[in-house]
Length: 636
Image (cartoon, rainbow, N blue to C red):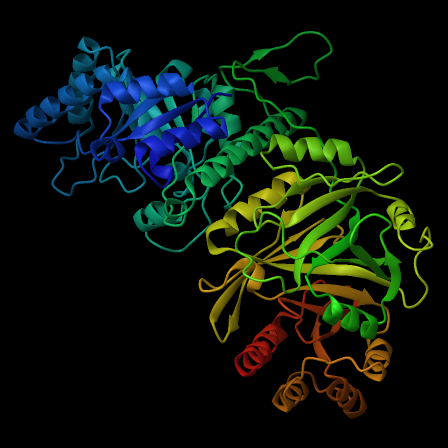
């Protein structure tokens, strides 16, 4: 699959954008007109630079409001088009995007549109240009891709084709099945964009809220499957209008963009295979393969690459917290009931465990590579996941542009496969075992081939704060690299405003990862994050913690009055909750008990007990936690 991206997707100058696209590995780019107009580079400079960077110049865009106009305006539009055609010759480009007219003064006549598009195509012949006609979702009279395609077919000119843009199609909920019957020679260009499903006017939605594939809710794999079935072989190019992306680091955004196309290519291949297996036939562009190919299976002119296949993680292997001064962390872990298992024989790290829940305390001055960390206070630095094959999973992540973060290991020490997540958290892939043990624990103290004695516990979930400019990137990263599935996101009230919370999880909930959008005025590693541990009996655990002197997050009495009003709990049980600063929630599937510790640096811990099939996180209690933590922060 040939990959492309429109320069409008990125921040910076045209030169910076082109360099970033080359670094990210794109095959080609679309030149957005404003980027060229505002650049000091001449068209010849741009052409040479693209060649030097190994980039093709695939599309010049946009050319607006051409069709459905009066004769005098048509003459002006043709003069404008010819000027752009001459400019494209200097750039060495041969395809231009022409959008359907959005002007209210335009004329509603398909016959007129066919006549005028025909004149444009005839003019394009003289300059060696192909015209890709696109139906804008808010076009005045042409807002449906099938309508645009019918106009192209009616003109019947080799220099006029259609541009298929996933946003304009899927934002209007148009069925994409007809695409597979299109003549591929009439599909001149394909643009893709994802988006969250929002209730707003489609123009504003398009201009501000598009995201890269995998970061929204559109069925892009199905869209691309139908494009592939049609026999299209041209570029698949990103066109993303997003306020955040255009304020973010250009190289990082370009890498995120490339990752999204790699992911989309794989998902499209999977969709095609599943559709073939279900007996859904191919389109006109596909030719059947021979041999032992399954009935209905097709091979298409566009070849879609896939990645090393991995299953979702089986669970958390460990969580790591780094700090220059670890005394506060050691105290809290001991009060929670974790057992100190000694220091590593060659590294400045400690191991603490409770059942299968393991916490590594790294006695390091600062987070490597995290320039946002202003101090060395405790912060979550790494997560370990149990996977079937760490080597294969690591290879997949690296193909998805995840930077490797190897750790130095000496003889007879576990070699972890690792890479960095968008928020700088290090992700390590560990060899999963059926009994939940970890061989690397033998490198600490006397060795812990078996789980530590004490209460049964596992890591239930981890809550990570994400920088505002990389939140969508993180969702795609964990989806594509770790096979976690995004759940419906929530917005939680706090004293600093609404906090967007996105849960990523495995199907069996063995891994639950919560991504919170950090406030704009707080960097990721200074905003509070936490690790939650699940136990069988939270009341007994809380009493033990209290006896050991644990500082609980103090829950206001008003909360318990409201709790009683909502659930009508037994007086003794309510008194126990209040005495131990426990929070409670209940739904149709079960009950949830939990408590929080005070914060150490930017880290705090949560202990939870899930009763029945409760699958949430105590969302009604989140505003209470945020308010209490905010109050503590203001008064310390």
